[in-house]
Image (tube, rainbow, N blue to C red; front, side, top):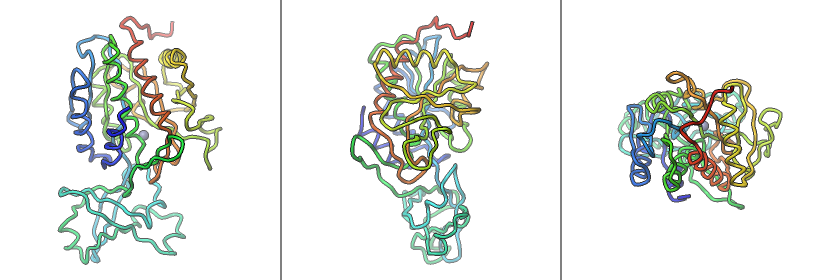
Length: 345
Ligand SMILES: [Zn+2]
């Protein structure tokens, strides 16, 4: 895998609705690795191998991340915010943040005190960001309402091939689908192979609708992160027994296609790769749900990367799982044939 490109994605802010910078990096990176690279009106970059083939397989990983949006500015120059996606509001007080303005990044500190720290019901609208401004006018000279905000964090390698960063959910997925597509081209896949870095998954899911509606795939696979049960506070009864380093996670749920799951398991077997299984009782809460309902309906599956501390400033994954996901999905692309029968009988 191209670790430099992964780290480039991880250092790029991409709060839902503000993904143009990261998508342009993916667009440029894929130029010499795919047969065709396109961008749609919502900003989703889709790379293709064999774009003229009739049978099409689409992988989607979302490039957007959760965060905050500047909603108002106080007379003292502090920024007020609303939430973008499923944030842990209590993780913000006392933390450094980046504000993405039209003239580049500026930095801030989220106000904290003993009374704020005791408020477990703190809402996004209770947060105040100190950017050093001395008045509303001072702040408005650099910040606009609608600017987005993330934690000011960097990606760091930990022991045992593990990686900690903000928004591994789901820059890992966007990275994996592009690496799997590049590998499918090298290995001479015969069907139409597509990889899309979707926008807006954390808020509306609309990017995946645009991407899948344009590709019209026969099979779609969402590539996202999932909760592990190997760390504090997460029950395996909710998630299945999921651990870091034990391989890609295949999801069983009422709408996920059993034949696609079976084909993924066959691929893992050929690669002598261990995979894990999770259960979702209804919707998966991923781009898979959206792609499934495009066009005349699209059979879909969900392949997930085990992740600790999802939606926190320091999420943790295993780089071995990332490589396994790339290998599994490249093998899936290569193993697909135009005469695959997807009806159950
Ligand atoms: Zn995600």
